[in-house]
Length: 107
Image (tube, rainbow, N blue to C red; front, side, top):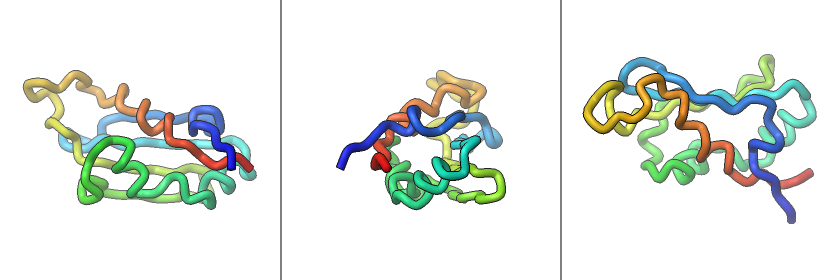
């Protein structure tokens, strides 16, 4: 079965702060068929997100599939508190790349 990276399927994949100790990710679609294909593929789950970031499943603090918005929202515990020594992204806006690279089975 062939696959495509999420970045080639989703319309928006972004990350941002969700407070000083969390980063939230939004995966959004403008097409219901593409959203449902990704939602139902099993490619985006708390475990696949944890694997993509090399974190424990317990570091995923929330995971939602929001059908009305054609979106998937994931929040993780930040590896470092916002602004702490070693935090290279105060706004949390550069953490989405591993998520974009998750392989989604082609439909």
